[in-house]
Image (cartoon, rainbow, N blue to C red; front, side):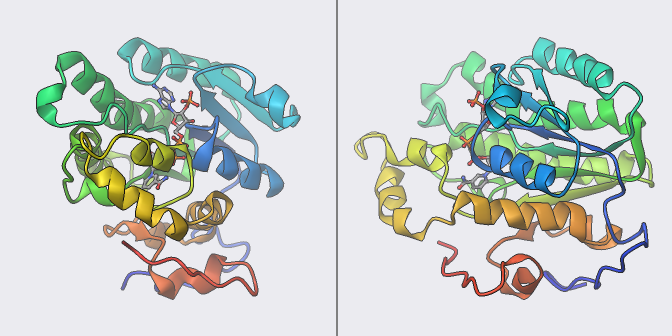
Length: 277
Ligand SMILES: NC(=O)c1ccc[n+]([C@@H]2O[C@H](COP(=O)([O-])OP(=O)(O)OC[C@H]3O[C@@H](n4cnc5c(N)ncnc54)[C@H](OP(=O)(O)O)[C@@H]3O)[C@@H](O)[C@H]2O)c1
């Protein structure tokens, strides 16, 4: 199947929708993860949000369907504690999906600027955590359950000064492929590139002095072309919940700039006026 061409969903057919059940979202405190949680709750889904600091449930005022697990996903201990806490939070309820959204572009700078600790932190957050959460939670997932990894162009190309992010996201791409081969056939694994989205991550890319991080100039110039976060979250929601199982787990990452899927998730009357840089 070509990018963006998807089967029309048929309500009631379990092969074409995400089955009922709880959805785990990492990186839920802000940015894409936060807006995704909002949309999933609005769709009537139950969500477990993984956050570094407590307070999301209170801030969102949505106690019944939202629970939080507090964990630093840049450490092995944090990851294992998160898996145990999620088992407890699920309390035998069916788990429908895991969205691996937590990520960070900082610390920026060339590889030569970073020691082992910074390299391992980045790699643990954006590669080890998604892999381990997927394998740790897979046994709890329902037939038709899904793992969605938030990817980036930096998983396929390398950019100067973004070395830690690029190496970790390249690994995440390989992990998505391994999970697709190795998880039970009842589960599906998808990869999605949300595009250049107006979140704190983009602010982190604009902030440095271009003397030390020349790409800051590009990110400053591209600010007007950023996709609103809530719009990108709609794309993620549709891919996660509204695509068929085979479409969802295609080998090409889902790409927000691919216009052929826009009719499925863009709100009526909204133009997508953003171009892939
Ligand atoms: N924005 C873009 O243009 C863009 C483009 C391509 C791909 N993406 C991908 O989309 C995903 C979400 O990005 P975003 O733009 O929404 O970023 P964001 O606004 O910077 O949010 C990042 C999220 O990751 C969490 N996080 C960071 N370090 C963590 C740690 N050690 N343990 C647990 N959670 C941690 C943050 O929690 P805290 O609040 O505690 O820091 C926050 O919730 C990322 O995987 C990113 O690579 C984004």
